[in-house]
Amino acid sequence: MTEDTVRPAAIGPTAPGRPRPERARPRTGWSVVVPVKPLAGAKSRLAALGALRPRLALAFALDTVTAALACPAVGRVLVVTRDARAAGALRALGAEVLDDEPGGLNPALAHGAAAAHRRSPGSPVATLSADLPALRPAELARVLAAVPVRGRAFLADAPGTGTVLLAGPPREPLRPAFGPGSRDAHLAGGAAELLLPGAPSVRRDVDTPADLAAAHLLGLGPATSALLRSPMLAPMQATAFSFDPTTRSGSVLLDDGTPVPFDAPAFDAGGLRLLRAGQRVRIRTAGEGADRRVVFLTLQTFPDPEAD
Image (cartoon, rainbow, N blue to C red):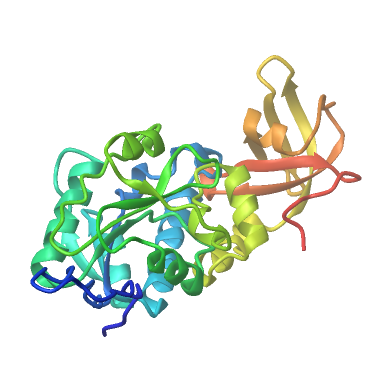
C-alpha cells in the first residue's frame, strides 16, 4: 500500500543556469515500529490488577496495532518483542514480528527502525508506543501527515514529558531517546516537536489507573473494552473484615465467606478515609484463586467510576 502523506511544497522558477531545488518526493506508506515488552513485566504501575495486568498490556498492544494497521497512511507495522504470546497474537493481526534486541527499549527501537529501512527503503519510519488503547486511525494519519519531509519529529504524550511517536524520513536513523524526560531528550537531540490539535488518542498512553480512565473517556479499542468487561472485574458486594489505617490495607469477606485482601491503591481508588469492620462495601476484584485481590472498594452509597 502506498499513499502520499505530505504534500510537496510548491517550487517556483529558478534563475537561468541555477539548479532547481530538490523536489520533495511523494512518500510511500509509513513503516510503523511498535515495541512490546515481555507481558509478565509490563505495566508495573497497574500491579493492583494482579493477574489481569499482563492481559491488559496485551490488550493495549492489540488495540494499538489494530488501529495502526487500519490507518490509511501506514504501509506496514513491525512489532519488536521477545514475548511469544504477544508475537503470535500481533502476527495474527497482520503485523510483522521481529525478535527483540538486548539492551532495552531504545536499542529495540533502533533495531526495528533499521529493519524497516531495509525492508522498505523508500518508506518513512515512525516508532509508536504500544500502550495506546484509544488510538484512532484517522488521528494517527493526521500526526504522520504533519511530519516534515526532512529531519526527525516527535509527538509528546498527554502529560507533555514523554514521547509516544518518533518519526523520520527514509534511510535516516531515528536515534530514539525514550525513557524518563524523553520529550526534552528528543528536543535536545535535534528532533522537531509536532504541535497539533485534534489527536488526543495518539497522545494518550496508559501507565496508571488514571491514564486508563482518561483513555476510557476517549473510547477504548475492542480488545481493551472486552477485557474490562470481564467477569473478573464485575462489581459485587462484600463485608469489610479488617483494616489497618496506617497502611490503608486490609481484607473483605465475600458473601460466600471467602476472604479477599486489598491494598492501599485499591482503598484509595474508592475515595474512602476509614473503614470499619462489618461495613457493607461494593468491590471489584482481579485474579483467581489464591491470587484474587480487591482492586477497588467503596461504600455502597459512593459512586463507582467504572460502573455503566
